Image 1 (cartoon, rainbow, N blue to C red):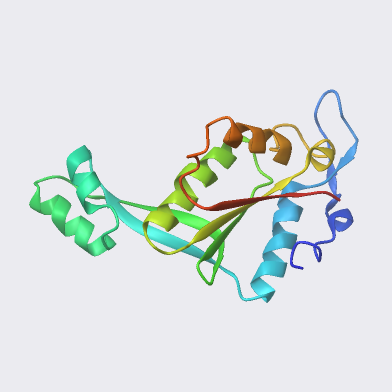
Image 2 (cartoon, rainbow, N blue to C red; image 1 turned 60 degrees about the horizontal axis):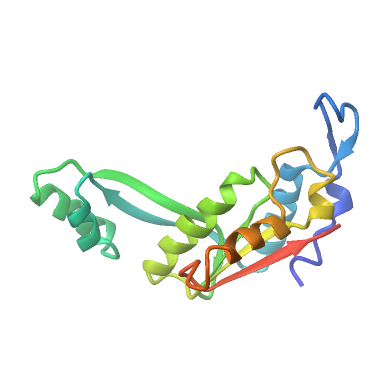
Length: 175
């Protein structure tokens, strides 16, 4: 319902400056993200952060993963190391489901799947991650470098049945 209520045609506002597509009108990734944000926010979904502290010691990192940020910081300091604040942010979370809407660059999909969703899953903040991607037919009417469902589905499948190690739903959208 949330996805169907996004008006893709209203997001066709980007005038290409690319050499081979100069002057053509494309779907704007920025406008698409704004449209999804408006819909999800209206339905009670909100951005969420998973705050962490990191350090260069692998054994320590393995031991403190899943602890609260405050506990992590104290343990890193006890080990005589410098704690560095970091976080993972996800677009929308509600009822233990995280949703990432990815109309940016294709390289961000792997980060979403194997870092963001994983961090929230390991941190026991979600039970499932959802990745919303444009289908190839939508990607073809966007600027270059945008991900598309068919390619990323293939990338996940070729890694084998054990990956990704977080329950995941991938949704492709078309105009």
